[in-house]
Image (cartoon, rainbow, N blue to C red):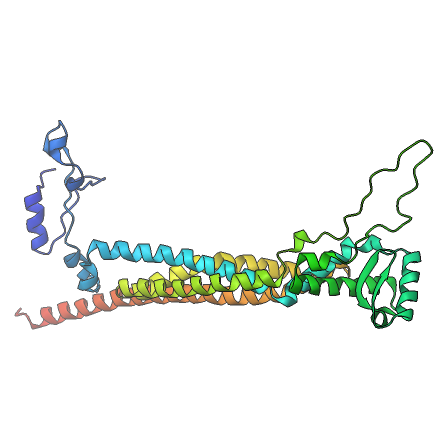
Amino acid sequence: MTSTCSESKELVSQGQTPAPSSLFPVPSSLFPCSLFLVPSSWLPVTPRPNRRVILSGYGCCKEHATRPSWQIDAKWLAAVAFVLCAAAACLTFSVYRLTAHGPAAGAAAPVIETMTQGALNDELYGKVQQAAQASPDAEITVDGLTLPLRGREIAGLSKDDLLKLASTRVADILYYQGVDAGERYFQDLTPGDATPPPEAGQTAPATEDDGLQLDMLAFLTEGSHSAAQPPYIVSGLLALALLGLVVFLSRGFGRLGSPGVALFIATGPFALATTVLRGFTSDTAAGGGAGTDFKAALNPAFSDLASVFGALAVLGLALAAAAVAGQVTAILVGRWRRYRESRAAAASSPA
């Protein structure tokens, strides 16, 4: 360890790279010798090389090599902020797409159908058909059971088809008018003969029926759809502005690689998640039923989201790959030029 700072500076000024003084070089600027009770010759001294001299040998831009540190820090901060804003935009856009009328009402209908399966026994179904024939233009209300259908819509339908049609109509009412409007139907979800009478000497149990409870489906409404639109637009525009700032603060091929990597980090997880959900909701081979209808309603939305996020992730990877290819090409071209110059210099020199 005989190399001193002054000798290293002379090597740098001559365009040479000083050799490290140990296997684990530590910049002397980080450890001032005056703070330690050891001789300065014991400390490994490796001055920071001149980045302009070394990097220019690989065909890099000198302006890039001598960028101020604050510009590099600003680029990293802008990239992190972009990833956060882009992730927020992807999340709110997913909510906006899933709460559109098609997937939202389509997913709520099979859930409501499952909840109302016990609301219509054979006796009550017969009364509903009689009321439908008697009042074809009015909503059907029989023994405390109100259906959101007119008589002519349900006359002649089977019990299962009637429940499916009524559940679809309630899902539409829930979406456009809210939970309270949807809960006023199917007030009595237990048929009159569902609870056996109490035995002698026993009191009847409290079996008050609260009717249809749709609080769990309050997310699948038009209000949620409208509330998700401003956040995804604002976060998306802010993400675009930050991405432009990342490009502006980058240099050389980093103007492709930096935004590409940031874009892939922000959209890659959403592309993977929506692709998995698209495959899950497209698997309807188990047969019909509420579960199949639920998957079929959400599959188009997940397919659209997977396509959008997948395209953005692939774009990010393509930009990063182009940056790597461009940098490698620049290095090879620079070395080839220096090789030709050295050959030309050797040929022109006197023997």
